[in-house]
Image 1 (cartoon, rainbow, N blue to C red):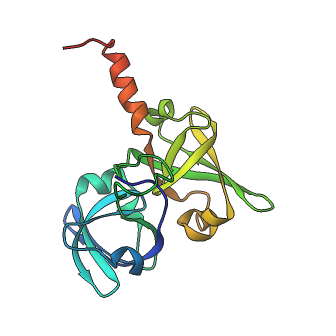
Image 2: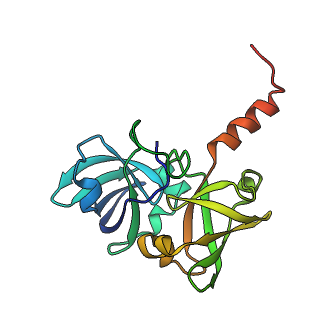
Length: 200
């Protein structure tokens, strides 16, 4: 489990396509400092398993399902990526509960610069709109954000200077894809309501 508080802005070192899967090597000195084979690291909000650690980089295998449901396939050597290690039971939950399971890919529609922050509008797939609510939480490229405005086809977020400086959202432009993970609590509530609250 993650919190959506990005620890480090890493960089793609290599992306090797292997049939319908891929192998990704990512430079991230901080997150790799205690990484071992089998550890989990979120890369742009996608929970991936470390298969190798060398110097200041780690390698992960990315399966077809992940490539199909996320924007990882659009990355290339040199691309910046948001990195986060899993939360420990003793850690503060600074963002919200993030699983690292991407629900879909959105697209930056526009960004309006302010004095110290940017307001960014992100288009989202129609099947995710019902989970996005004003003042609710959403994960964008692994970043826990608060929704400013929710529409049927898009939502807006306000990015503070720290987010602009330390994450990929400070570098994204209209048309760029982003990974989206909606609040898992909303999905559980929907399923329970659909079941009519019946008990076994």
